[in-house]
Image (cartoon, rainbow, N blue to C red; front, side, top):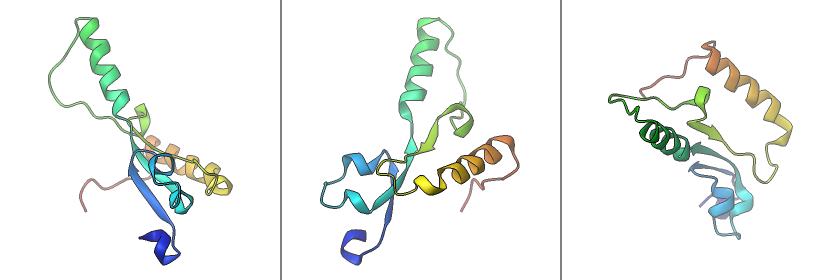
Length: 100
């Protein structure tokens, strides 16, 4: 839809600039990543170490549970600024709401 409208898009869950149809990948300027591999690795590591704990585990920017992609270079000129915002979120200087 973004390609047809001459607009840009932000992917979600995985790096959609890599997984999208090559005919439209150029309009995907970034993707918000859910790094499920981090959660799976942490769980399997705790299982191997016989240290699995029940309860809620939060995976966020501070432990690479989520992130963003820079594939394609569309946001190269602002990556440093975005990284700064990321650090401010991790440090608690920017509060991200958990409800819409």
